[in-house]
Length: 170
Image 1 (cartoon, rainbow, N blue to C red):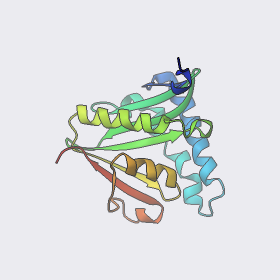
Image 2 (cartoon, rainbow, N blue to C red):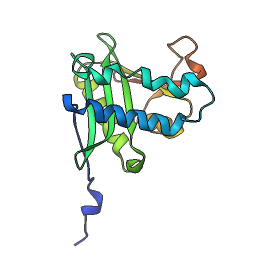
Image 3 (tube, helix red, strand yellow):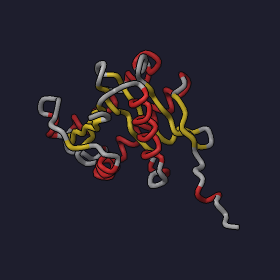
């Protein structure tokens, strides 16, 4: 009989817990620094460090019709992702980060699939997301999940970001 253990992930996805905030913040900051530590624009280089209050206060920021997920391996947070309510019909996929040692193992795809499932069950019609232009692997993941390129919704956002929308209903 074939050994199927190598096909089972050594991680699980679960809802964010209050005690996760420091570790989730460290993961997000470390992934950001990995990609943008040497970026010539200080706005990009330092952006994430001043934009994590939602992680520090996730119980409030991700309340009604929202969710924050963590991928966990051996009690360490190795990935994050969230759905944030924008209005009755639309939500945003945000905080998609996976530790470098765990990339290529399906962690990001699993988080994204769980988030898409959550958005459907919450009754949303569409999911939007923005992603830094430099994160080509992330863009391939989003496109493989059915996200379509969209016009920027933030003035000047195209300077640093790609924008995507996934329509959940026709």
